Image (cartoon, rainbow over all chains, first blue to last red):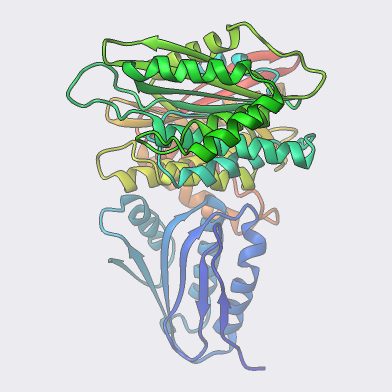
Length: 125
Length: 368
């Protein structure tokens, strides 16, 4: 079964998610404060696992957050870990977009970058 | 010590299932935010829908009354530097709204006269008075003709309590309290509650606390509170980024730390928090009740975290992140407390106050 694109509409407490299997730039953006981050990130993780197992297409994933809570941070790390441990990790590029002067999100990006071995660029916008 | 302020407010608000106080600046968009906070601050919904609608109406009228009628704080004259206060408290049987704002001395007699007149009228007379004002359209310079006040009296069904305090020849503070009580609650006619509210306000000014909340720490109450923090203009320097840091810590406190109750299970809990300024920093003080085993657990964990330097904390955070992937319980990654200690600009302070049998008020003070 081929992988379909995944689009989750943002809410006051969850980010917008757009994941495209055909190489269009994908992103997770907004604020991520769900109390149950496990529930919110399950479809995202399933999609990422599927892509990392079966897809030959490269994926550029932009992560752009105003805020995220610690449990969302844990699931972002899990998403990146899945990509890191896939057989084709060179297919993946992570763009961490951060507003200039937003030292909190910059710090969060640097933390995640230090935890994984993936192409991980931090860009100020 | 600031941490004692939480204990003071905790004691002052005992018997209230929820309480909220905001010390300006007042902006239009907060009208709906405050309605959301009132609607989500208490799990106990004992009020009838018609009474709840009255509460919402009164909240809007009182808040907009400040927006429309309060005098701006005079910049050139060193009379008074505060925007005022908007607060509410809910005991389940009684809902009270307290406001304090600046007025011009020349208007004080007129306002006091109007409130006293409104208080002297019966329900039927109030209705006539309202219709008369509506017809004659006697608008004041700032809009409104005391119509809001008349409507407040009609909805509340109680006397409006008020007090003015002369500041100098030009300005005065006007304080007002409107309440909606259950039929069996006796109406207060003394000024004790006004005095208590003014003392409370003075304490908030002294400690420069501009936001206080007591109630249910739930996801529903978190969002409007965050909105208030995000859109406030309390910090002059890189304001939105400072606000974001405060919001970040607040989220972790409300979602994690305040939930160290009943065997560390994640559940909705009641708590209290304050946000204020000290020197160039903002502080967040939060408190909730824990039992002895939770106290011991928190003490041990906090003592350890506080003993670490920044580098060690970062390393621990990394380890906790890696470890979190291995655990089945994905609801509790244990990262929240580390995040808060990391975010604290100076050494995090905490305290436990005995609050009952096997109960302690756990308070932390985080500077950002």
